[in-house]
Image 1 (cartoon, helix red, strand yellow):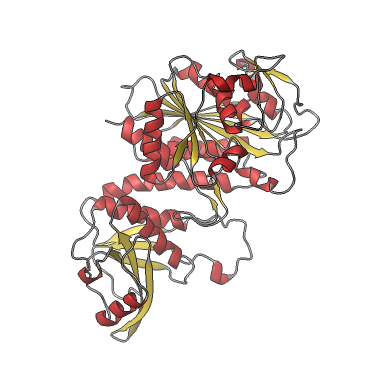
Image 2: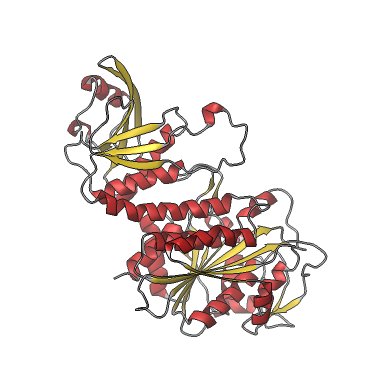
Length: 489
């Protein structure tokens, strides 16, 4: 990921210059080189400053050839500024340029510190890549851009950027966790990666198999019993209220670090993608980093149920009955419906321990969600309309969009079991809804709860506005904004 610096003036010899241009605002910009030529080139390219549009030119001035990139900032809303930064980063990342100077001194009216910070955040997020295992990458495909230098930033930029930088770092952590292969990232190493949150003031507690068995977490442990990797329950607590708020907001993440389906084995085609079945846990870890990094004035607990779902001789079988920590029994019809078994025990544990009033779980839970919403929205289920509205609004403001689905007693009968309190899957129809209905049975009376099924959102097969192909970091900015909007005074 590129780094960000600020400079009061444009240094001599800067050979890559970028200028942000608002919608239909090119006439208000003092252009370098031959302004008439630049204007004509922009017109020929149909550049009008639309958010994320780019004109890339090479100009000569005083015997020096330099690169000029005009990048559109649209109406200069926060999302438009992010699009501009992302477009700039995408254009130059492998261009051979090592630094780009974003010159704000040429604008008739400079954007605010918050707008500049959001532009920079877009640039950094779009520059993130996970190339650590690529040893033969062609030179022309290697990232060359290392620095974004903002020239003439407005007053207050340091504080505005500090907040955005924390969020960017949280997203980067989540993307890295999601992108790592399962032989590198498993429950124990996931926990190890999150230890650095202690440096930000996050309290960390880890339960191993023995502690979870003593707590009666038979549903989670049933999933883990086919793997040689020991399961872990990772608990992260940030209290930016210094004890003033007793009950935390709770986030619960599904952390299946690899999902073969267990005995209900998945088809081989595409199974390699199941390294990202811990995307919910990854989002929770990244959100905790963001909140602690920007010193959020809120009390938040993030908990990750971390297991590997494997099909060895000790794996649980279809038809097994397990007893959850809540005491409810579950007939395991399909061992590939494992995420809800992990979440239900994690949810019970965190409710007993912290007595929250608000609990949100995130999980790459069902393929049915991808069938329903594709890769445009995460699914939202909730027992409280106000909570659902708050999450929807938070997601919309940062581009992590959610779409609400129904739950209700009519769906309960679909997961009733003839020999246990419930079964872990219903019929094919309404698969995402019955999964949410299952989880609702583990929500304590009076707890406002939401379930986010983000199966289609944590990984992208093609580049998006703020990411390249691969891990997206979905959920981090959503949770951060949810906390900022509703729990910080």
